[in-house]
Length: 251
Image 1 (cartoon, rainbow, N blue to C red):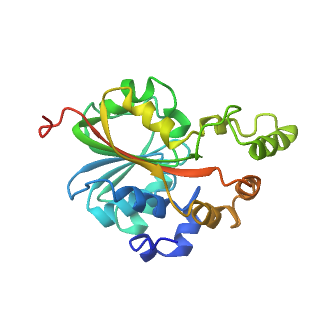
Image 2 (cartoon, one colour; image 1 turned 120 degrees about the horizontal axis):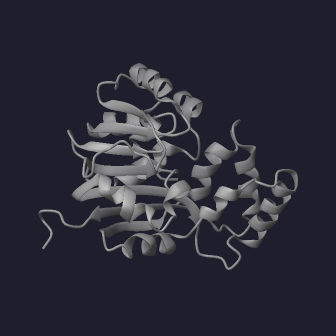
């Protein structure tokens, strides 16, 4: 298991109290190895949840963070940012992904950990909405749940059976899993827009250890069953970093 030295400085109890998916600080630290974040930059943390990633960005990189989430209220996140001592650098925003209150080219970078796939598989979302928020030459970083490759039926057979069993009790269960794709799929998804240069795109190592730290805790029995159904190790956590074309250093 990789040593995530920055993340491991943070109180495990605080992380477990506030995480909403596979260890967000480990995933963000992995992603940030492929980003050039510097003090004073304005960074959008899209789908920040309860703000763990926003606190990390402010403390570790000295950036100003706009912590955007739909499911968690801005006031609740503000209290967490005050308690973490970063309320002067992290600003909570409650907004839906298609109705974002930001000016074009406002951000130096936009990051999203375990969120972008919920809205970003739409072919038009990146070129028509998300890409406009970042300056030419600016950076994008995402971590997605997905698979090691594409499957004709959308999912591996074991996971298809798992989904079907869940849907017998709750027909709408698992619809967001239509958004699970491979690293190669995500690379094509962004490259074909012509708006970015991909600087990293790969499956994170030790995916089971990262996911299981969340799934076999007290909060997510569904995730534990999902991982158990993945008998052929097809589940992935995918890192993608990119730079927006048109920057001053581009030839």
